[in-house]
Image (cartoon, rainbow, N blue to C red):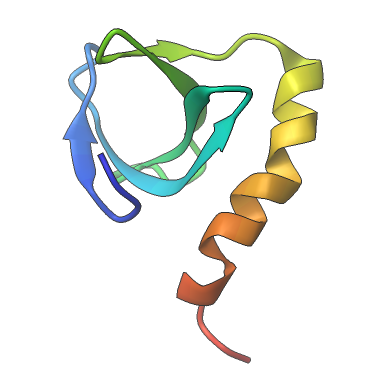
Length: 77
């Protein structure tokens, strides 16, 4: 799974992979719901399954990494 891929999760919603980072040997994903962009999800890969990240402290640590990984894909102002 790569940035910009569209995936369908168990909730039957389609999400765009907005960013992906490898941190401490795990792949983490920042997902945006295709139909409701305000619906964001942070996940990690566990044996090819995506598991929602519930650790708010870790999410806060990952946010700058997600930005760095995808900043070149953002529109230039």
